[in-house]
Image 1 (tube, one colour):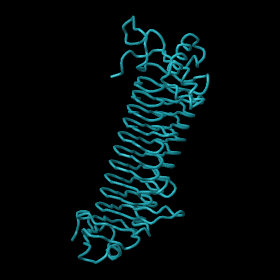
Image 2 (cartoon, rainbow, N blue to C red; image 1 turned 90 degrees about the vertical axis):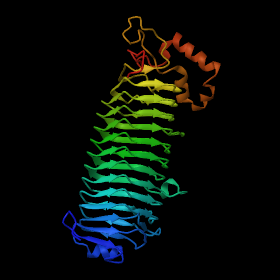
Image 3 (cartoon, helix red, strand yellow; image 1 turned 60 degrees about the horizontal axis):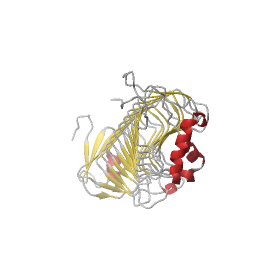
Image 4 (cartoon, rainbow, N blue to C red; image 1 turned 60 degrees about the vertical axis):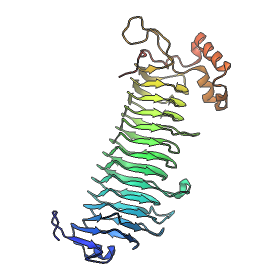
Length: 397
């Protein structure tokens, strides 16, 4: 049957018995329709433009031996499959679906279960990964499982509306540019919900990163926009909602950081805007290292955090103004919505805890209250220029 795109339909089973026969018989731009059932045919190589379309949720089973689908052609679509039990290798990145040196590949509406890597892209552009459910194996340690969605040396791609869990990193980017990650849920991964390195000019918005081993790490990059994401319940000895390491000229705006060990950890960050975020119920809302400079933090709301902000040096080279702090006790005699006195978000006790973590057991004690009173009497004990010079009296709407 001739399709609208100009190719023919090949039905499995029907016109042929196996997927291998269909792939061999198909001409470029044909559509292979795969009926419900289980197919365990080893590795399936797609080396020509075509559509591989599942009907009634067919299962492709790798039997823990092989990479199930390997795509080495542009203009390929894989849609509507349940792909399970890929092989595992310490030498090769075996995946449920791998894409190598291709353009315009669409991976949509699939369920991936018990896979080593889920979807793995290399050196590919203008591709789409959308509406997939990707669940890693149960019971493996971090070094024995790959990433859910993995991109290496790629550009101009879109990752939309996927759910990823149980992998080493939910989403992993390295040398990836001009790519959008939006409306994904990355949760219960062993290391990071998102791990992002050496990648510029990318946009992340409205994603949810929850209950991951060590939160989200975005490193060694510039011109990154992270907008309206949720970082929730990333707890642990070295966990955080968002790690920003060696990030430049970027924007972090409209995000919710809730119940993380550290909401935002900043290290070596420069010339970035952090504004209109809500940081609530975190251990540390923001931990900003002294090597950060020329960043602007404005119109953020700090609510019910154990510690609002801390740094490890005496020099602060960043602008902190127009934020709302729920602990601010100043007045607004001019009634302009801005407190008359600056706010010092770092207290003496938080500085002691940063240097000696075991002292956190005194958090609710009389000693902690005494140290806070001492700091008010002798304010030079903490960095004098770590202040919000114009604190807001109400949260920014």
